[in-house]
Image (tube, rainbow, N blue to C red; front, top):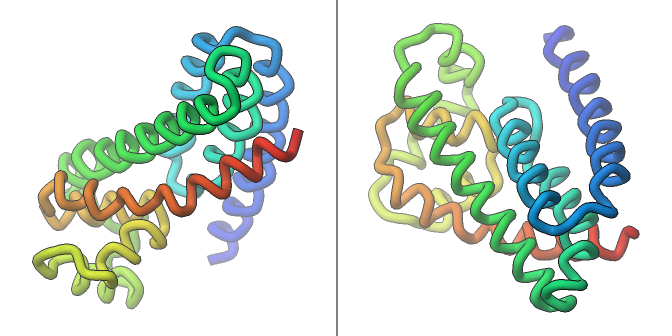
Length: 185
């Protein structure tokens, strides 16, 4: 309980400090190098359980849009950042579902870290195992905690493609976050 909350606060503060440093370091670099760095950092951060996607999208908006403006123009740069953000999210979901949840589903530590027996996860499992993509299932896929939601899908052996399709409406969160980041600097 207390250790988890302290860890979340420390990780949240560290994430903000690290991303601020990264923004300063990459702002004058070429677009290809900035993209490579942010893809690497973004994937690592997505794979850390306590880190949500919003700081990653915000950083992409702060860095990619201004750097890409010279190459693509403002609209092209926004679309580039959107595509990159969406690809990062879908790749992270794939790795979390198949590599963590799918391969490590018998590990007690992974199941415990996801909280598979908590009320929240049990109710999420009931909705996620329903066939099709109803509003409730899509809401969990895009609004639930990133890491536990994807890992629980792997633990439940859900098909990857429908889960990724259900995650696509995340663009409605990514777009305003990217634009907010682009207006920040």
